[in-house]
Length: 194
Image (cartoon, rainbow, N blue to C red; front, side, top):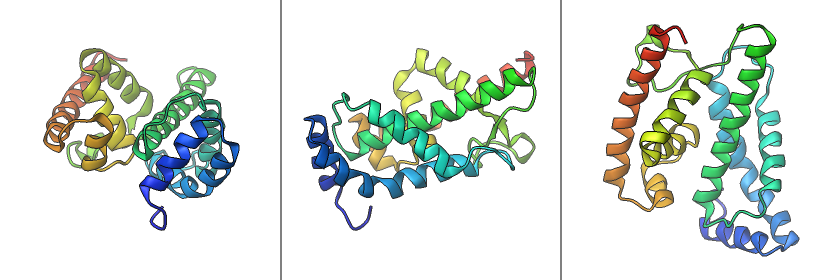
């Protein structure tokens, strides 16, 4: 991505939305490395020996994003925010299918944030995190979106602020509050036996 400007990616996304297949063909090489980076962030957080590989996650996301060609892409940041959401959904679907296939057995594990979860609690269940994030979205959709963009999407504070059209200070406030809320919700869920 460094050799190409965000503006170039945005222009190609807009052209793709207008139905220009050649724009999509030019776009893929520009975004593939960033999609792979996002997928790698997800996969590093997964349990050792996970059967889904980084490239497979990128490919599955790619297939779903092609089907999303009716999305009105605002810019590069919006595209990668949607991509992060797609990858999160793929991993949660995978975790749920493994869990149901093994009668509640081995679920995919994911670290949430090294800065506020103690080492004894690392490896939080991705499904539980997804459920907590969905609950947060019902209470405060913007905070949930901040977590999705920052944690799952790997976006910076500045990129998150741009994507949500809020100030960087607002992003940091939402990020701090959401992390605490999610931690409490996941702890409550664990203590309730869920």
